[in-house]
Image (cartoon, rainbow, N blue to C red; front, top):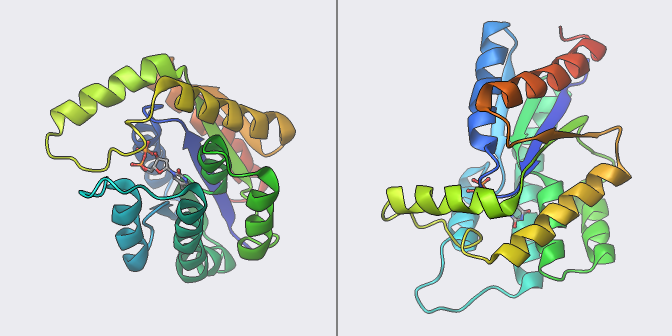
Length: 218
Ligand code: TYD
């Protein structure tokens, strides 16, 4: 049996990390084994790329959008070969906090052309696509408020580069995600993230459970 790849996507502050933790708990309760990882930073070297990508550099120098794109893809190429493909080949369920749709939404919003994004996807992902993507959709005007509070509470927390982009940027990221969802309705399930946590978790589990049932895991 080959595995199942499930990804969680959404803008900053959409509650992905909370939902990932609840989902992982559900897997444990159902005695389902799974592998949970994230991008960027799912491998040792990827962790270093994550710091490079997300920490604002003291010099103030910023990554060019194309340089940034290649770093996200370097992280992904490493993650795919070391972690994701072997886990799927061994028949595991793999849960990922962000994957290729984040690149399309965020780097797309930075102005990287769609054909460049598609070309890189072909080179690195080849035929691989998530079996299910949960898009936690929320209004950035509300989620950014939450993110700013979180960053203030976690004084010294340095991974704030994208959080600090303006509202227009995040609106455009959201638009990018929603376009992917409307282009690929069979793969991407849009879940409203502005409901209470339990309601969102219920919708997440319902989508995941039906995919797992179809794949013979439940
Ligand atoms: P993270 O702390 O994981 O953000 P969040 O808690 O909101 O999930 O940081 C990942 C950041 O990197 C996030 O702002 C989105 C961005 N990103 C890209 O721009 N491109 C990508 O391909 C990926 C995977 C993430």
